[in-house]
Image (tube, rainbow, N blue to C red; front, side):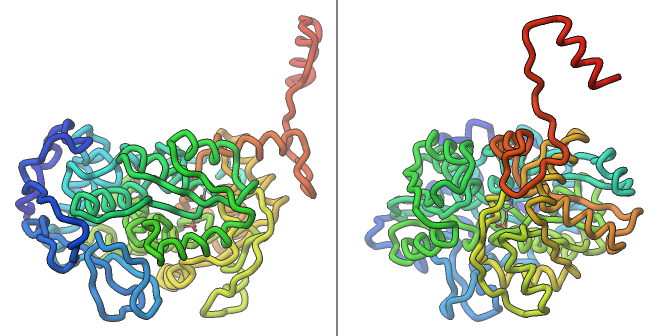
Length: 490
Ligand SMILES: Cc1ncc(COP(=O)(O)O)c(C=O)c1O
């Protein structure tokens, strides 16, 4: 069963020193130097031939064509989205039980790169990247929080929050960025010349790209909608040395420009339109199931903006089904902010395509997206996972975040959008009290301090802070302190 190239399960090979490309791993032939000018992707020696698993780019819509994952392409010849295509038959060389055992043995070990939640599943993600070219910061392996108190308020006993924001750059974007940057790193080692890796961002993609780019020593440029991201999100790429361009537009405006830059070959595109990102992000589905001892939950709820993560989630569950790791597909809820709700509108109208909208400012700033690039992917995920789309108003999301925080969570505004969707679906009876529900928390609340400060000081426009808890300012006087404690806890 075990493929020849795999290290013994759980064995600490290759050594940790392989990190940072300093040591060659014995499994891999040395890299020849390729003159960039003469680069021809079809003629590159495939250093991964020895590997029984393979992944290439193909067309999302099933069209003809196959391209190496190291090739800087972002659209199929007919202009559609691309997809990473795995050799499913080769992956069937292990049974579902054997894959589960392999992944369990690797989970959060210190054996490079297998302790990463993404690279521990490397055969399913990107089998072709040699150890010494992987750019990983031990992403994934995030805690799955049993939201007991919050669940009780809704009559749910099996409510969980997958805290993807407890990660290196503070959001789920690390899961995909480690894959994308590793493949770029490999391509550059094979001779690909790029000026910079770039993205448009609502703040989290740019933070992750800047971090992984810095770890790999790759130049990074990020296009941000000026004044529309949090201070923490702005500081992250600055700290990592990226070229930060604040444009006088929204995310959709930045995305249009970055696509032009990619088309012109000026940057390598790191947005989730690039399916390499999706491959890493899909491991969250595998990890959730693994954390439940390989049982799929009934529902997964996801805050959604550019709509790539829903497709990633589906791909993870779908692969597990195909390989016999799970027996059934959970249902999907995609949650949008009412101020940026093109998918919700399409869903309500029963449309088979998503019309762009002009996204309005929302506290859930990372999903303030009106023209989602991955709309076709999301629609397919909804179909395959018997999905539902919900939306949250500004008032609803602000209060949901505050209520969840009161039960020990520290909720980013996007996660709050997902919580509102949960509350609505429970109230409507779509989600039943006995069902196991996982809310995917996509970012760390600490990145959104201004949101929380403004809520607790009641300064968010058109929102009443129903659960505010402002600080009590006192003189340095024992009597006043005792009075304050007595007033609160009497
Ligand atoms: C915190 C956060 N939540 C949710 C999303 C939405 O993910 P997607 O764009 O894949 O729908 C994003 C990014 O867009 C994000 O940064």
